[in-house]
Length: 529
Image (cartoon, rainbow, N blue to C red; front, side):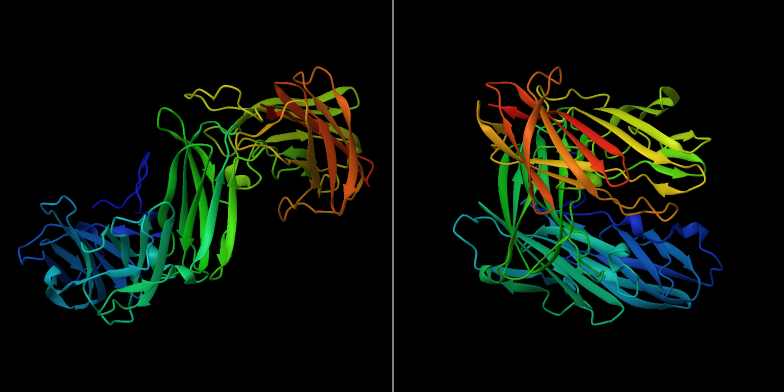
């Protein structure tokens, strides 16, 4: 059974993330350097017949990696190697079998070895499953080079339903064996386990009472498309053979909720958003969550309001610089959850336009704005950003479709510094799963102001908020009404009076301790329904 996830994979209970990103150089057989020996690997299926497969050969301790077809001679320098393969066979029931095997081999002269699937032991897993789980667990497993800095990067993987996945035991400490099992019912139940060597009885027994819980709350209205896949990846604090193993939790049209019960440890939630043409157009990776047995956490995707997430103006090399990235993004995800935009960026000094550019980060990660300045003074930088993704049609009534920023700050070309300005985050309470407030109601919006370091090249000085004001518009920004704001700890509460229909735009203005202002506007911040 195939375990790779390519293109648009829908509702498949388990997959393994590809490891090529971190893998060492794969050297074809014909180009091995300083060959003084050879290796031929034969792979036998579960009935003893030869099975054609691809064999991974890893040098110890360099982790230089070779790939060769079974039965073909591979020229190699003399030394110690790990030989690994997934022996995959078809069966009448359509599920087939997968047998993972590995050997430690010393090559000197001509060497031949056999990986024999008949020696494989079934990877057995058990869970005190609820009645709604009717299918056997799907299991993905890997055999990894244990001496690698990231073992999962030098690995052979396979996956199948319980009863159809096997592993050949090997006690060598040069190997690791990791697996992820997933049971699917009304909820998902996901277990991971890693061992040194391939155990004689691979697998494990798990109890629901010893699991943690990850809940997903997926709202609609804010995204470029409504089809979502939510998933979890194993993220152990010390990389091992389970790192980045991947389990689909749910997929379909937002809004929806889904729950996964997982073995205690660190997990990476993720979201992939698909357009109607099948393109994976958005999504991202929120913070890794470490959960103990019995603990639970809710990961939200798509909550209103999407807004700028990180990048501030800087003064560096006698220029005002700005990276127009992460301007419209999901704050619950972070910068990896930002959508591509097209924006107009303008720098002014007084009434003079210093520079104006229209940019986009679609298809490029290096679009940036830089405007040379010759004298100290007060500057104004404006940004007008719209979501931009050619080739797809945005959902009707998409929220957070446009964001503007208007920063006023003092700058000196002789001083490299992050401008002492702010971004704001709007978080409305009481919206439904489609990010709608009730007609003619009052919505409490939490408003927070923040700023972060932009890197080691520019000084990040302290700046504080002297005052914060909020306005709301129900006619697309034609007119604005001041909103009552009260301080609440480190944030503010704004009481927004909603119209009878349509959508609400929100605007904030922060006055900072350096004498500057930061004005941020999100159009169609949330809907009325």
